Amino acid sequence: MEQQTIYSKPVLEFYTVANEYCLYMEEIDKYPQESIFNYLQRILPLLYLKGSLLPEIGSVNEEANERFVTEEQRETIAEHIKLKMGNNDKFIDLVVSLSENEIQNINLSDELSLIYNDLKDFLILFQKNTLDAKGNAIKSCKKYFENNWGERLIITHKYIHNHIYVIKSKHEEDSLPFNDFLQ
Image (cartoon, rainbow, N blue to C red; front, side, top):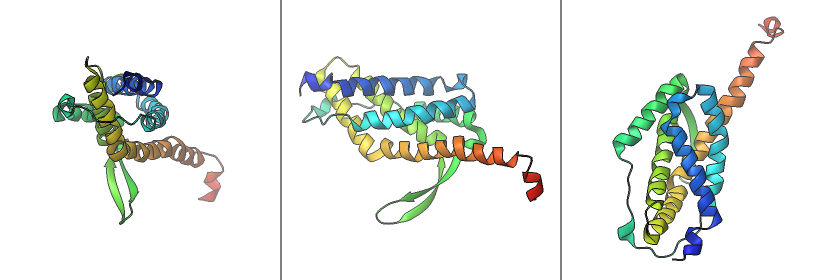
């Protein structure tokens, strides 16, 4: 494993964005709901882009691989998000796969906290003082991106986009004076 790859620009940029996301989620109580939606609208695509650019890491010492965020910690983050989102926490999405299409009820708080979980584990493992730990952090995070949080980002971002633009636009249309004549 090359030190050059571990400290490459894509890895360090991903680290920076992941750290920003995790800090925000840990302090989500400080922000009003619409500010949270605006923040997520911007950070989620950036996380997706930076996650997709993580380099391939060859063989690593699996003994240096660890998970740190407990289920209780993840649930605490989820609960804080849920409280901030209120009625906007739940949404429905059509999940399309090769085998079937399925409508799912989704909780924004669960999706965001599961993304947090994978990113926070990456951050903590990457801070360890060995190249094996850093390599494992990158390799695991890339695998989790491909199989887990990358898709969660897309589903969540679609909902956030609709919340900001479609719902807002619908509300503005409903409040226009000429709509009184249409009813």
